[in-house]
Length: 577
Image (cartoon, rainbow, N blue to C red; front, top):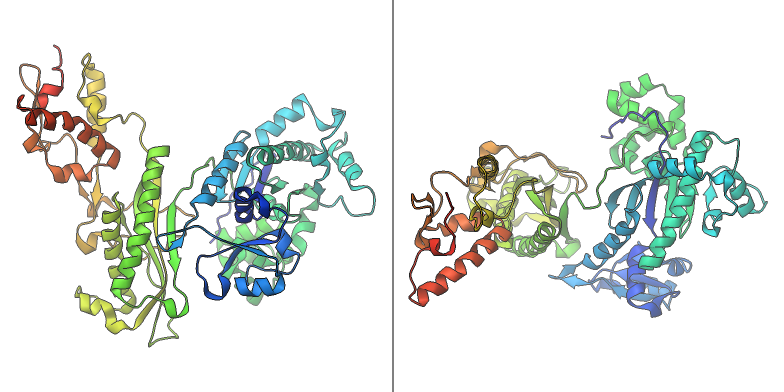
């Protein structure tokens, strides 16, 4: 259910930047000869010409829609160019589009707090920048206004046949405007400049909505696409919401939207104004009732989160109609492909952004062959995430088997029973890495403990000891450990809480069993025996630490072949006393 956030007292300036038919733009940049021509991006499957996942504006003018398949699109628009999305592991690979989206974010993040909402949309809080501009160089003193700014749509202003640009300029440069509208005017100028920078740097066009909160900015950004921006003054909020269908708002969709229509006769957001906050609370609870009351008045206190990196990594695959999965073996095959992709992405994130994923979650959509009327959802399952595609695959398989037993009402562990007589079908499968956190500050390379210079001070030794003792690696222990949070259904856009430590097997660095690493001897050198290093412990370490340890062990192995002695201590200078 939506959460009601208190409206801040001070005025904010929030922009929602939405790329214009982004996938098509990315392909047109790669193939410039496609620019200006009707084009669409299709899924890799060839059935009836493939499914359209993005349609360019030139193709839309001919009546091509995303609900069509390639063959149907060609009948509507014979000259349409159908571009296949890249393929990897027998499924769509969106890396090209994710990377292009990161280019846009890099430009937008130069101004204000930036929150990446998806591959092709970003929220910006430019309150501070707009406030500074209002103090130092307000719109009313500008001698000229950029042409791109004058193309803006000011909700409630552009109503008659007068010159639009002149009307926009008059609104932007009013001396008698209140502080809220003056800040929005500054925001319009700032966002127009940012959109031009995005076009110059990336060659992509984007549209924008500018308002006092995220909700209104999001609604406004799609009003005059492509390559346009819309400003929502406070006086025009009711006009925006009066005729907005409740189903158009993501948070009001589904059960809540259906309930508003059936129980209260509410079809447009503006219809909510007739109900008191108390009545809405009585129907939907205190929190949701307050949220609905606020929405009807265009109020939303949700902050723009300073996040330019995704808070989760996920990949999935659908299996519609006759392609539905019906055997454990076919599910294992696709889990292997999905886990390989997920492994590549989390390891890349670790290397580039120094972030570690904590939780692995499996989702699936299914139905029972002999029970078509069943409304029971296939349960989502989570467990601590272990790095490495093989380990991800192993854990995902255990999660799936546990979820399948629960879905089929089978509570044993027999694999034959899990198959359930082949009376189930999987029509959607996905794995996600969530709870992605930055590596703690102060955690340094493991080889720092093998100092080759001056010994650390007693205080730094104590700090390093605390860091060592705080590092743990969690592994599922059988099927039970792999079924944490069994009733939790994860929204791919939400973070999952940290699993309970009671079900984790924890390995501590710095305990008595050090896997071959001993305390320095009385002579000051490390007493280290290569044969005593526990390879199973080494494999549980993060990949970058594994690689670092192995690099330091290579000279040891070469030395033994040359007959020059043994003992890893030869390669570490003794700590001076």
